[in-house]
Picture 1 (cartoon, helix red, strand yellow):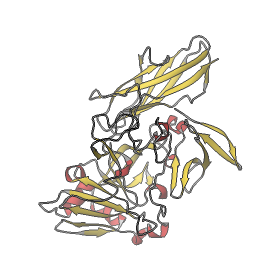
Picture 2 (cartoon, rainbow, N blue to C red):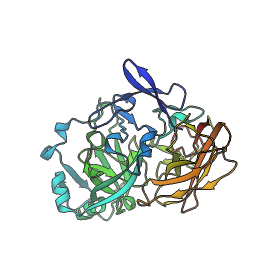
Picture 3 (cartoon, rainbow, N blue to C red):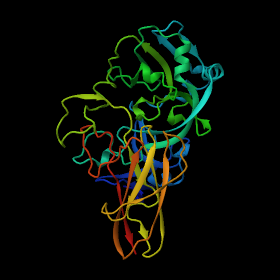
Length: 389
């Protein structure tokens, strides 16, 4: 599951992601500590798994970065002060346009703790391998997001009776005219959910440049494809939106588990939506060493799409026997939930550690990985091999 800082390439430290050809450079970008660089154009940075052992909130300087368009991110000059304005138009009675400062003065400012996770988090672990960004399990993070409710802004614009959807466009622009602009859509009932924010802060600070400064959409419990960065245009629609990044992109099999037989294609697809249940061991990396006979505190995190985590169970023998873990403080139903368990390893040798979460709806994680051709929504029970010495 976890990777290790494993060596150096041309003077740079490297990180070994847990799949074939998984060695990546650790590179420092503006406002970031050294992170796992997946691509440089556009910048795509993954968080090392050890960061998630630092606490429920992922530090801003360690938060993953995901862009789609090669010209990203927009220049800071386009984003600062009065140069940046957000507009709301379309099927409304009162179109709006304002600066970020005007936005937070006009509407109530609220906060939500929520996980942002890339749809393809863990894609590099799919077997058979699939196309797309080959990432480990570090394309996720949990933060306190502060901003205004999207619902309040929409209602102030006086929605038309036929309003059906809302589209969102950021300032990350296509490099050439033939490349589709990255626009995403929410159905109206979801857009009016009071948990959906237009966020201006992250963990008590302004959004980092690479995480959407000065304004981003926050859709708790839903995959990061909807969390539009550098958000500057909101459009209320009275008909169904047609666009590449909704169809054919970011679609999953129309199946309760979003899977098909490996190597096949789904008959029907639907847009990707809420997270499924996930859990990770964060205290011990792959290949770590523990002492025989000594009590070990194993820690980790779990999360889901908003039902909340009910329990986490732990196995130190590859799933043959399980014991309950102790859940930490609940940061809210959309956040990481910490868990701990004490384990006393016996004789020397290799052990396979597993952690399995279950949410309040009774949804859990499969013991065998499920497959789909886009490499989305991986949520198998992840394993960590350690050596008892």
